[in-house]
Length: 367
Image 1 (spheres, rainbow, N blue to C red):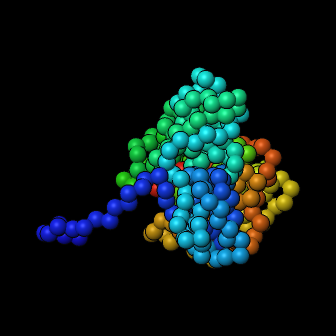
Image 2: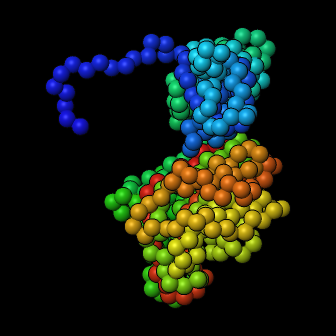
Image 3: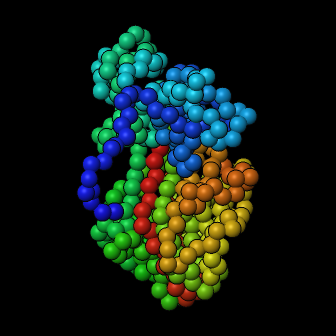
């Protein structure tokens, strides 16, 4: 776009406290509810962890019989949208004290505030205690995230372009950017200009390479896994496996063979060696959803975005390139409180096949 050569009229919005959002299909937002924005579709809905907190609904918006976008959130009979995105909020907050001034608070559903929650549910900060278990909260700027020093939530981001120390074949685990880099034989994990590379060489051996969060996240607060990656070399043998997503147990045994049954709870994308199909599977330690073809194939030269929204109910929504995949399949990791890590793992249980996985970015968030 060229630089301006004449005056230009800019549309301005006078009231910064109210905004409009189209409502998700089948959603019913009540007046006074916390409104969430689905992080993939962009539609408003009653807030649930993994959503982006938008504000509070000024009016009821009932779209239970409508399609996505057919109703504006908080709409009155004249169609004016009323979602309060700024200002002061007086709300129940269990355990709030006078010394909690400035403390971050989070929405944990459409009607509950807490000192612990998903960072995308950051509501704002305590201004003062109004009464027993009632706080005055200053709403944060739209979609502002908590600061690194705030308590109550976690977010770990791995940027593959940042300098990391290669793990190599025998170097053991390395730590960087809040993540653990593991390898056993193979070429290990190392960085390039724009990505981290997990790579095996042409040696017949049992090998493994992984990048995983060094923190764990409780499903009780919802967990978001968001990664940009691609498999640059898919190998030539079925002894090779690629996996990325959320898992409850990552140790030497599970990293070496994620399919051996040791991994009791997980939701992940999966690829078999020498096959371009991207699969998805999950296990909640009760219902094992076997690998299903997403009908999306890996591109050996271009990255794709992969998202897993693990709701606090244990239900998982899976997306590739911002489109939901296998929506009719009941992926889940269980609603009982359990801890999970975000990971990317490359393994081979035999053979001399080579393999290369390139990780550009990975974000895992929750509490």
